[in-house]
Length: 302
Image: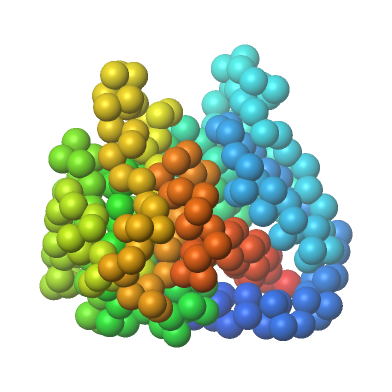
């Protein structure tokens, strides 16, 4: 039995295998429609979610399994003071696999240490979001053909953006990837994530100016400034509109560049961009379901 708490829990070879499985699911969904029959996924969401929770549920249903769980900590014994460790032990009595989202960094790791079934981290605070990274990797693979040699720009909240941290960790394992880090000074990438890039001797640039680097990018990964991560509302209001992607700003971008976003967006991508063929953020959503199907299948060994 194993869990996936960090994208680095999966080797490059395992990620390649998951991508192969996901692409086979896309081609032949009927082949996978019963592989999890009789299995139950518990979705333990202590923090709000639309895409991730419903994506996990859709993934399990499409594999032929069932789902139980909750979408708010207020409806659970956590509101009475039950620990994450005890919750994991309890849920292990009812389900075959857990997907957990929690506002506190490290909570899914604690769950995995105490559960007797696999645990998938569905996002823990500003720390990690490995299944979003799997969705991102499938999107880049399908749209750009691979990972080595790409130039990717991360724009927005790089300090608290767990999807950014996870994707950088994943892409740093490939050759000649160049990272362009675009953010306000207050939301720069944490040094512990930047050190991952440095340790791999990969190229990176830090800037506050999106338009000055637009023409260099193969992938633009936009993020929202996350209100829930701020202690001071004044800081949030000052920074929330730091970057707004519009069709005009895309004029200097390459024809084959792709625009990604883990969603939800607020106003950092104009809705006018949605009709641009380079917009891939809704493809990411669908790709997330396929990669979660592949991951559930792998962890349950079915």
